[in-house]
Length: 454
Image (spheres, one colour):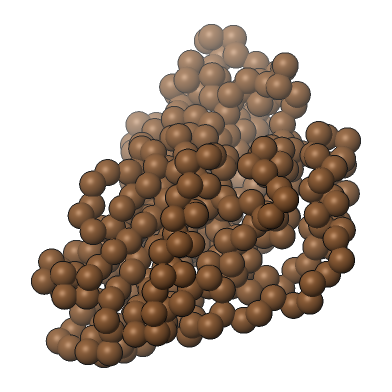
């Protein structure tokens, strides 16, 4: 039976292999390249002679890596020939000089909310695409986190209105699908607004998906995809989570109840959206590494939001306990995105959904012990809630440290304070910005008890 330190290193290595497979530069290199006189975007071939200018726009946590890969693929000569220009909204800790493509710090690191800087960047993007012509090519780079990084409040609404909506729905435990259904209706750039503003002949969009099932209209709130939802759908979400009683301004409801203006016009440019990486990509790569290390993994990538993080964590712990005694897989790799219902700010600690999930798993394992297993839950973006950790790891060492320090999992879960629990017990997983985002990745390694030494 491998020692606890070996199980921990295996879990980390398997998790990092999944993360490496969805690196933004790697994904773009596989989908975007120049071959002779042609530009290849996925399966599409674009004759370079037919392109006057190339503009790159977008937003998301993967934006910096995606933009760097595009610029590298074009090379300096072609970039100069095609008058390459670009603007991509990214988190502040991902911004930096990149030549022709400007990386705009649209929000502070670890603060996944719309800001005035984000609004300024979104306005610049809208102006840029509106100034293109029919012989120009616009390349869109869209990834998870784009909803907060590309705020453009609809006429009559303010940034504070959008902040109130985001904060209330997030704290209430709304899913990303529900949150983005509302966001799209309150924006000039989401729900296809970017595509409608674009006057290029072609708009080719590379998408790294952070929404389970890869619905293009919900990833970054679908700036290049016509919105199939309606204002009535957004109102239904707000009513479900008692938004009127939670401080969402009345003008948000008034805006959504205004008389319908008819369907939005289709884009004037030809639009192609291509998903180049998603949660399943990470899960599959992690499984390859698990097999390379001698495990027999079971793998699953959720197709929709999974519900409360605490329930997901307890189910993972139950599965791990069963794996120790049953024949079959000795490694479980899963991907998904649970939700956390936050307690009032006066009682709230610090944490994120992966840390909350891991702590709920630890609580379930406390009775049976975590000897002979390691469980890791982490966000592929390197940001778990408003913290500097991607997630947390649970093994025998963490459990022993928690007991020695007298830490109370139940009380900590109740106040959403998993970060401080794992900081004390030694279970935080920190990566820094990963320049990608495909939801969450979990790894459980658990050789069967029959293999444990007596």
